[in-house]
Image (cartoon, rainbow, N blue to C red; front, side, top):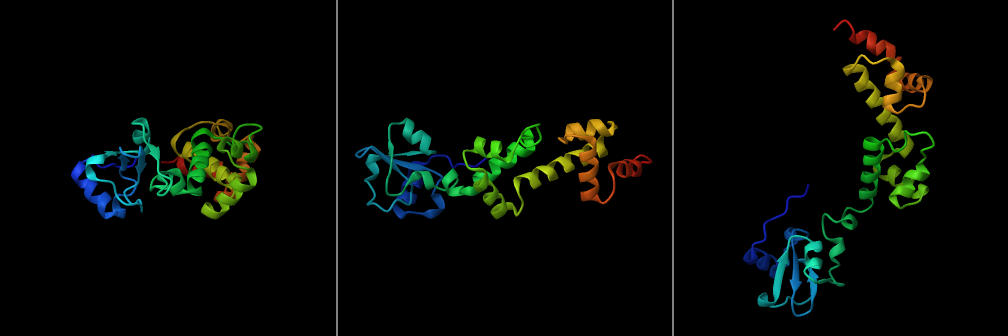
Length: 196
């Protein structure tokens, strides 16, 4: 959650007139004479203070009837998706992979995940390689193994149940991937834990 400042007219007006970059994205200025809203760093000549209102978000300015400025482009303000850039797409994909198991279901593919995100599968693979140095499938595999390890440590579920809850399609695949990552089968991890 992004902490927003409370709207103090004098403080916002000082920041707007000074084009203070530290306030960029923290509030937006609606100019009554033009019907446009701007970022505090807008390069156009500042409007008179009597002609402006301040809003905590671009949405609030739009709901008040203001249009976005074409010069300062409010959609690129800090904390917006455009400002975060491609990282926002990767973070959404990670949430879908970890929270919803988007690549764990039968028939789930990187292509279907990319489609949910509104990008092509090759673009998604490039974004993952750039930001995470791993593919979406590799990330999903790691998430499944970590989920399985937690279940091994925290429950007494049978191995087949752990494999299924962790998102593996079969016990064989679970055993293979787990041994590859941890260098030992999951039963060895559980045996080591049992005497505790």
